[in-house]
Amino acid sequence: MKFHLALLALLLLFSHGAAAQFNLSAEIRPRSELRNGFKRPLAPQESPAFFTEQRSRLYLAYKKDQFELLLVPQYIHMWGNNDQASKTDRGLANLQQAWMAYTFNAQHRIAGGRMELNYDNARILGNLDWAQRGRSHDVLKYEYAAQGLRIHGAVAFNQETNVPEPGKLAETTYAPQLNNYKALQFLWFNKVVQKTSLSALLLNESRQYATDTVYYKQTGGISGTFKLMPVILTAEYYHQRGRDRPGNGVRAHLASLNASAALGPAFRLELGGDYLTGDNSRTAANEAFDPLYGTHHQFYGLMDYFYVGNGHGNLGLNDLYSKAKYEERHHRVQVDVHRFASTAALVDGANDFTRGSLFGWEFDVVYAYQLAAACRLQVGYSYMRCADALRAAKGIADGKNASWGWLMVAYKPILFEN
Image 1 (tube, helix red, strand yellow):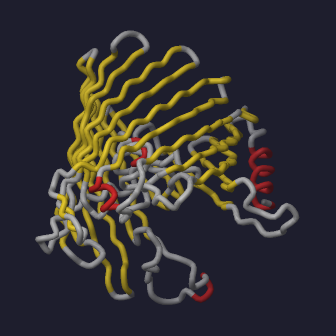
Image 2: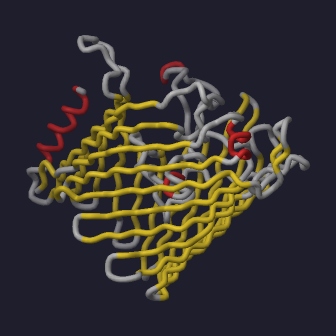
């Protein structure tokens, strides 16, 4: 905390320069949740969970001449997780972002540090803002922009501090127990031509699973958005190669198609489908697609049954959905319906579920009200009608149908700017 206050005082001092731009804002975002089958069905003997978790952040943005920096200290805690008079704190205090950048000219820019990576629709690289902690990466990034063309390239090399810096004199082993890559490189291309936006992503990551073993996996794909008013079409395709944790070869695919149309000034309807391949247990290769570091919460149902920190047996996913949105002045209502099915066969010892087995239906309703320019209230309710294949994939044979309700207030005022 003393470190954060010292940085704040220093930046406030710098902000008095005539050519400097300084912005200080804050965010307080508590969210209460009633989880009656969130992420997985509850067994009959289990009861729902209820809690409130809060994100508290400061955003310190500074820019002078060709230099800029951003600091985002944050504290994440669950209400009541500490004794009232305790000197220990079980919340998370960290720097969610801490980067600096130098702009050479209108075309070239370089940035380095801890930053969010949020590209296209966040399918593969997203900031995961729904999660209170968010997602960020320690990277060095180069950016180019000219005549509607943008090119970004980034590299990362991670090490852990189980061996403190003074004693880190040899080797670059990256602890296998960390759920993170050892190294990452990517190139992203985007070209906008009139009402069409086309992007391509090439990404390579390496993960270390033993002191003498590193496996590499490559993900490449294209995405496009086509505005054929009043219809907007979005199409994506990604392919993965390389090796997984046991060293098996990876051959996996993701395909997505989405169409949305404005049906009046305040109403929009979306229809679409996502297809992610699952693993074929009859082959030595791994055919299960991994969507990596995307914001999966916004794609595969709000109840986070798929690809959000919990497995469903590498069975892939066929997600057919419709989304209806109504937005007028301070109000927004969204209703989503998903039909989930597997794209690989499941054998659980008691039952065999073929490829295409129904996982279930999910229904999501979200209402948002803009209380003020800096404050938004959101409330949501979701229901999952579970099929037997989903219960088997989650390992809960007698799991109940699931529901989830939540209430969130986000207040993000500007405290100071010059």
